[in-house]
Image 1 (cartoon, helix red, strand yellow):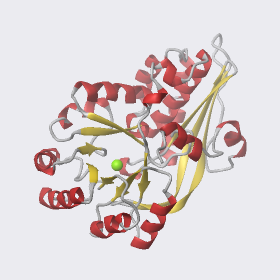
Image 2 (cartoon, rainbow, N blue to C red; image 1 turned 45 degrees about the vertical axis):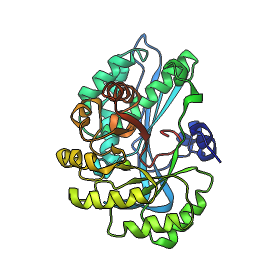
Image 3 (cartoon, rainbow, N blue to C red; image 1 turned 90 degrees about the vertical axis):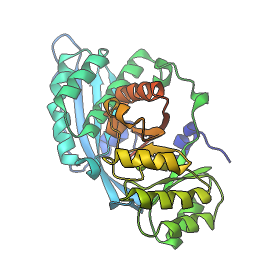
Image 4 (cartoon, rainbow, N blue to C red; image 1 turned 180 degrees about the vertical axis):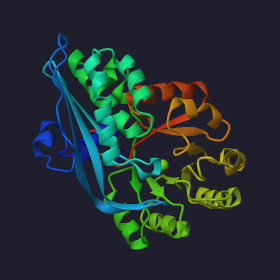
Length: 331
Ligand SMILES: [Mg+2]
């Protein structure tokens, strides 16, 4: 069975959408509202944190989690509402409290600008929020949602994209015991592609557990887990023999020279994730990686993600769209 991204969203879309979210949240956020700027329409920005309980403990090579505190943003002006979400990630020193603070710090930018001038707002937010890129993402997603609704067009139409071109999405399987891995693979039966997390000493056991259940295509993400180029090469050559299509972030992000060495010998594509956040990171990676994994939480939103697509294409690199642990708002 094949599943387009649109179908995936229809399947996975939960109740964490829209007005009910902001009516039902009682979490640890610091919600407050702004008064309108004279002459530019009544405007408010609400910020709330919601705890998302995960169905399975989520383990990758560097950490585990059972829940996520994500931060939701709601921008209202002229009777139109835009929604955004931040998924703070410990890899980048992010948390819900700092994210909320950064979003609150950027409120004046939205008060002082027409929301249709979204490129100007992005520039101002980029100058204002240096770290906590997920805070930028929440604001940009909410802003672009507002703009699309104000123009009465979906964003894919605004950007001239054809939904029929949407690639298949893969379903991620976190690190676990072989028995739990098998259970997760069975639960993911409707998804035609799997992305399997590795990067611990039991990589072979994990892939063996997946392959005992299914022969569907798999991609592998080491999350910087292999620490030398020799170890990474040995792992990759074995994974290739197991039908793995490509490898994501085999070694620590700063090991660009070692990854270039690996790429010459791997025989399957290598994709950057932790090594790339924004368009400015891409040129130096072109020799070491075949592609990049773009995530809104790293890029700081939709506008920068589009710049990254343009930059990667200009450099002949492949593009993958990924996500952190997010609700249907950011997904
Ligand atoms: Mg990754």
